[in-house]
Image (cartoon, rainbow, N blue to C red; front, top):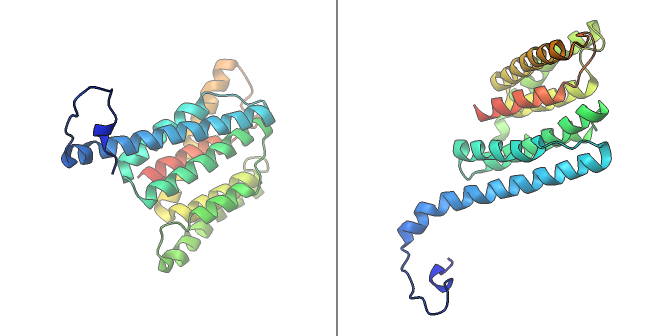
Length: 216
């Protein structure tokens, strides 16, 4: 444990700090650490996006800080928190890629799938796999019947996310993500007087649904 009495100006008498006080402020220090870490990783993602895709957005900086704070207060210092932060930054990277390039590397769904194995009981794996299949099939059918409505990256990311989230939360993520996508796109394009038939990046909206589902 750090002796905070040693960290003082020369000539100033030591101020006793009890273990109770340290324990009381410990969650604050931990939360602050995760906020700074999230800001740093968000900054790194933003620098990468700017260098490779000319995509510079303040969203990359403040969204990770806000979401990591919410996750800390929701889950505390736990593997669930670490798992959620990993998922957050994977989706942040994917959203930047989809927004600028309209494509996402296969590394993203694979990384989400691997993240899904963190902090789970292996007897839950069959249900997780079944959830991914049940929730992905309708999306695949829509993509086949209506070409251009759903991209391959969208399908793979949501399949991996539904594996991680399981059935109930996976369904919530899909519904909320698509609802936000439709409402936001209609409003934005009405304001800009653009065609509603023009395709748009779907991963950022699906990512919002996934993160909200994870916080449930």
